[in-house]
Image (cartoon, rainbow, N blue to C red; front, side, top):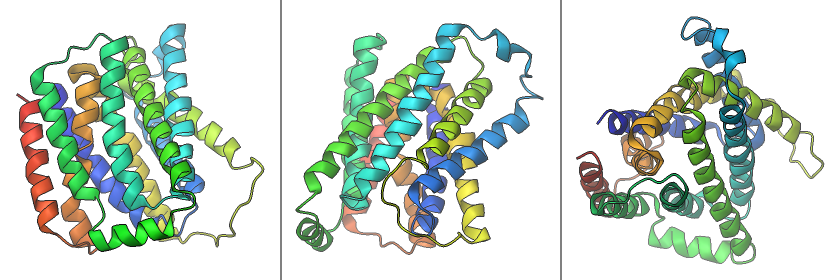
Length: 296
């Protein structure tokens, strides 16, 4: 039960983080926002690590777990997130988010079963289907929005969908790499290693050649909200996510944390003024039922 509780706490952190990120996403370039969030989370971890567990064991981390942790940062945060943001330039978030929220847990489940030896039970499968079905209802566009989306995105939609699916697979691989890496490494230290490496690579990405839109210097309030979203998402949420992987397994952790849109629904209604529809209510019921199966 410890792992399941950690996964739900992580989902709560990600729900708040996602709401804050949405509120500033139009005013800060995506790559810059991703780097800002990683920098804030890195500062959070390195403010904590000297006190608990301490820095003495960092130089004694075995090489193989270290390689898995570094690879997870490269594959998940740098490549996965970067492809996701580039896919968003081709399709709308109302299509991208359902795709990734469904594809990532399923890909994680498959990789965890095939390569990590995690067991598949009918309870896990049923809970997964209920959660993903409910999430698809919670975050899918309304019919009018869907028709507008299809008309507007017909030209580059296939490329955007492909990038979403590739990013989901990369996130799934990253999650499974993390599970292997944290078996011999303290969780705080693991994130303290992964995130600064991701920051360095994301910083280098900003200098890659290519067209870039002109942006004004973000306001202090937007920068602050972006940093807070990073501390909640990559920082506090990251701790509970690794605990969930450690205690509940990669597959179950990925499915339970995908319930973040459900937990973020009240925040979206209050903070972002989004509407509650019957479809969202039904999706909420499905997700809750799925969670009940998964935490049995």
